Image 1 (cartoon, rainbow, N blue to C red):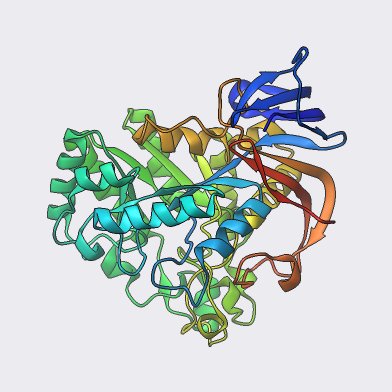
Image 2 (cartoon, rainbow, N blue to C red):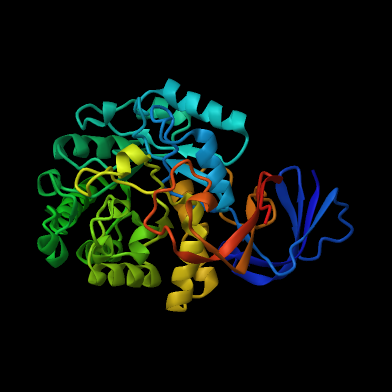
Length: 431
């Protein structure tokens, strides 16, 4: 369908655009921006008073299929993503069964294609069963549709296997997405080590669990030359190491979860299990370092780390509760809230959830169509957002099958009004 979006404020970090422009869409792609001439549209959308932004690219969204359909389904979580303006989803491999065989990847992509909603990009398991012992058939997984390889959130155990994996990945120009965590130092921990955890009696995970793993990763990277993406950094000390590695010229990128942009360990309060996250929330100093890292370019992207957990997994004592929180449909609002609080230019903030994560994604899979931008020729994946609207996070305002989030009750800025994928209107607000 030919669509013309008129009078919207176009925000496109990739192309440095922030002005009121029209967008013409045909055959699923953007065919004109600005003066679209005599373009004849079958549908005209008046976006006056709204921002038109690229579809968000979220680097960590667990859809809970296959294996955990009692917590969420592919359909429910993709619907939640579209309600938040997220059109491209990177899926970690820790499903059940693990995404370590081509047939499982093909099945997941086939089901997502049948739903015909958001774009889904699976990460393949780096080792069979994510056990850290035997390397998967990465070439076959790539042919099946995997964009990179990961151990999900599992700590690094055998550095010998990791070194061999890095050499293999370097040979075929694959990217490894790794969660820097030392197994011994993190074992049994449920909160960040520090004054708060000691005071309330929670077993801590020290920041050294992150920094020791980073030291090992960078040493191995220097000898192999492999491209690394570091997932969910959480500490000031860890960010300092990444900053040094980038200055050295190592091929490394990193992301943080939006939870860690806003929250600290003391927000746990009286053992609220909605704040049981992985990695754990750390001190205000760490949170401030994350915000600084976003501004100085050390951190490349912000993700939702969307991990739906049902009541059976969350309504437990803090130490027994399952890690994770829903977040994909909150991503835009929480990033915009951070931009408002820190007076970060909107294009710079928006780039952390569009152009920059798209660059990370495409760096490992250059054959993918361009995403995270609104340039002529790009797929028409975009969202219309009311930046002046406010909404309250409540069970009945969340589309995810899980409503467990540390931001429950928060009033957030910016509300997505419409989402398009491939030039199709796939979600539209009724209020």
